[in-house]
Image 1 (tube, one colour):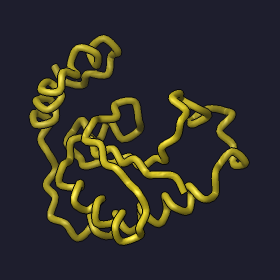
Image 2 (image 1 turned 120 degrees about the vertical axis):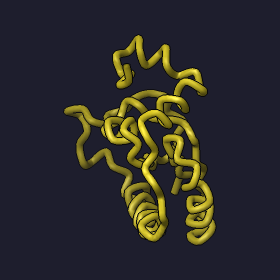
Image 3 (image 1 turned 135 degrees about the vertical axis):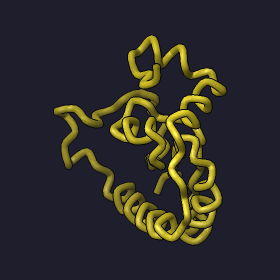
Length: 130
């Protein structure tokens, strides 16, 4: 299967777990600390709830079929789906045993400001803070 890319939305405490799961299953996975604000995770992450996004890396740099009317089952790569399920289940099991405190909205806002993301989020209408 293809290498997994896991976006941790600023929750750096998940990075060692991702490395451990990748090693356990001998499957390449990279974590990326960036925020994915154009996802169904964002409203929760913006309020400080931990959220990660797991996806397979590909050479394609576009939106693809995801979340469109063309997003149909026959386009799913069963190997990627299987890999996602195994890695996600193991990661969720390990995260469930962690003592992770939600971040405050101020923590998320400060982190986004530090990363220089405020202006683009304000322009796109995705900045949830006053």
